[in-house]
Image (cartoon, rainbow, N blue to C red; front, side, top):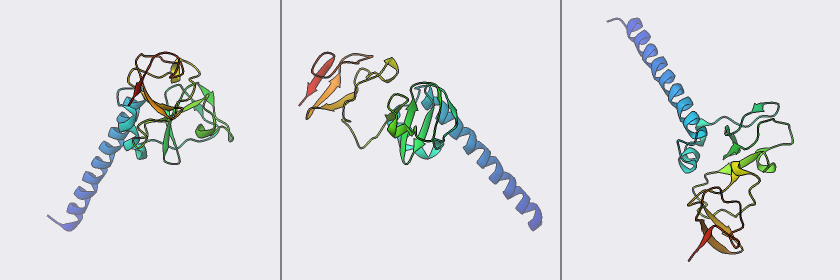
Length: 148
């Protein structure tokens, strides 16, 4: 087999692998956006998600990257320059930081960002675990178990 033929075959294989990797990446992102992959796993592969951009129509549950953090869209909207996910909690929820087992509790705005059964938070210096789904209450009010 001549070298030119070998080179073409190698290029064809590389293109095939690249196509498979792209399809796999797209499938992973779609599974994460449909809550079929947990947030921690999604965060561990944040490089597969595209960066947030202004002037884009975002749909609920789309996930975008800002810096090294992932954010899930809570409300459909057209993004604006000054509506960074990290600055607009009514539009975006930061997800899945594996280094932060008990993230600081923040008041949910709707059912889209409510805490689910088993979610962990820090509140007033203590750790809590949600004992219910769709939890919108403060940990000292209802629906939370204090962790020791």
